[in-house]
Amino acid sequence: MSNYWEKYQTTIAARLREIDLYLRTTDPPYPPETVAGLLEMPKEQVWAEMRRQNLSLLDRSGFFLVMREGKSPVCRMFARELERGLPSRYTPGDVSYIYDIDIDRVLDACAGLGLTAFDPIMLQLLLYSIPD
Image (cartoon, rainbow, N blue to C red; front, side, top):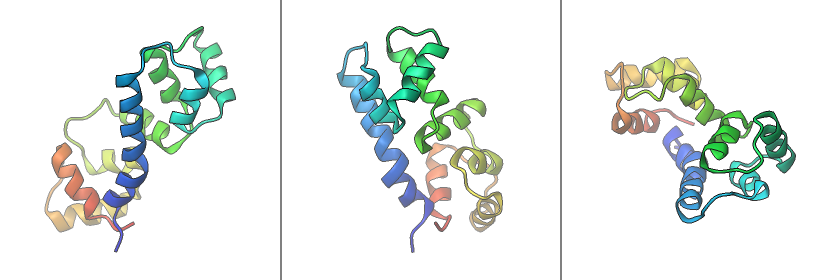
């Protein structure tokens, strides 16, 4: 049986590792075409967001401004996590919203674990407990 942790690892986490490696090994400014590929969004959307934010170049801050407004799964999850204030402990509602998982599935997994809040380590266990 597949679970949400496996889905997260093969989709979102893999993309986040790629972004992290790029930002750690590449000096800005970042080419908009490369940013578009990393964020899985059309380059036109990157250019449009750069214009909207009055960015002539993409430095690290600009990268995250564009990411916050993107529509790809990794960008949407990043924006939702920011909206929730980068929680150090996650409620079932946080998990449902940030990871775009039906709240009833999250609550069922919480009940099975006997937990109502999750630090990042326990969040992995929760996601592992949610069937995909």
